[in-house]
Amino acid sequence: MTASATAKIVNVCTNAGALVTFALQGSVYWQLAAVMAAFNLVGGTVGARMALSRGTEFVRGVLLVVVLSLVAKLAFDQWA
Image 1: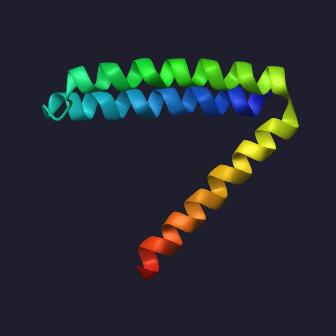
Image 2 (image 1 turned 60 degrees about the horizontal axis):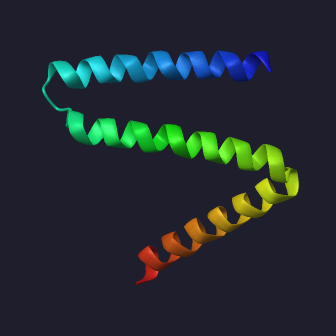
């Protein structure tokens, strides 16, 4: 649990550094960033609640579908 919390803190710090760097360069589309942040917050909240209410089997199933979909897309992109 401590390692996960530490990783989250490091992630926030690196993201803040990247935001400052890109903002100083004028490379941030603020309206798009605000919409993306809002949907990220909503998606994280909904996902966490679903994971807690439906349990580990549901999470494993969703993970499996996502991974297999990504593998299929990468294979299609490689050989199409």
